[in-house]
Length: 418
Image (spheres, rainbow, N blue to C red):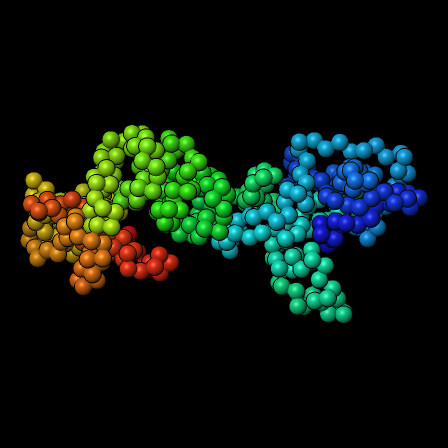
C-alpha cells in the first residue's frame, strides 16, 4: 500500500501535462459513520503560495507524477474548512500511546488505501521502517529483489484506534477512556515520563480521580507538581483526597505555599488535617513520610470481630498487612499480622495473640534511620509513636527505602503489603 511520505514533494500536472506545483500536504476529514479519515484534497506549492486541489480532480494520486483529470484553468480550488486534517502538519511526528506495548511512540508515516473511488487513511506507521521511508533510504536498505530486510520491523496501529486531540497537541488512542484505565498506575507513570509536561497533564487529566491519584503516587513529587500545575484547584483537591496522606503532603510541599493553602482549604477537613500534621514535620523524617491511614483495633475484640471490622471500615487503608492494637487513649499496645489473624480461632481475643515486643520509631527519626530499622527487623511497615507512646501513623518499606534506593530500583520492589 502507498504511504503519505511517498506523496510529499511529488510533481502535480494537469490533464495536458502542464506543471502545476509540488505536493506539500494531504488533507482528510473524519466523516460521521466512517472509522477512517477520507482524503479530500492535496495542498500544493505554486509560485510561493498554497493551492488546494480537490481529490475529485485528481486522476491518479499514487504515482511519482500526480496527474489531474482536467485542465488547470478548469480547476476550482478546494476551500479547506475547520474540519480538515492536515496529515503532514497535524499528524506526522505526533506522539501517540500504544496501550498494548505500554509505551509512547511517534507517528513516522501514514498508510493510505483506495476503496472504490475514495482514498482513506488506514494505518499509522510507528516503525523505524516508516522513518527510513521518509528519509528516502528504503531502497538503499532493501534487497535488489524488493525485500525489505534491513529496514526495522514494521509496526502499525489502525487509525480507528487513534484520536487526534488537536493540531498543537499530541495524538492519543481513541480507547483512552477504557484501555488506558486498564493499565497499571506504574505503567501510566512510565508513559507520563515519556511525554512533555503539557502532554502529560492532558493525559493525566483524562483519567478518573482515583486512577489519577494512584498514577501520581508512582512519580516523584517534583514531577507531580509539574503535572498538576495547570489543573484547576478543585480537581487537584479531589485528587489529593484520594492520595495517601504522606503522598499528598509530598506533593503539596512542592507547590507554592499560597496554592498549597488554597488546596488544603478545598479538601475535606479530616483529610486536610491529616496532611497538615505531616507537613509540620521535616520531609525526610519519619513524621514527614508516615501514613496516617492505618488499621487499629482495641485488644478486647475477637479475631472474628476484627475480620468483620476490616471488611466494613478499612478498605481505604494503604496496608492491612499489620493491624495495630491501641487502648482507649490511642496508646500502642501491640501488633499482629494479617496472616496471624487468619490463622487464629474466630473466638480468640486479640490480647491473647498480639505481639507486645514492639519495634517503633519516633516522628523525629530520620528516613534513613527508619529504613535501617525496617531492614534490620525485616518489616513491611513500622509504627510511628510520640514520646507518650501515642500511635501517630506508620511508615511503609517503600517510603523508607526511597531515601536509600534510587527511585527506579524502588519502583521495581514488589508491594507485598498491598
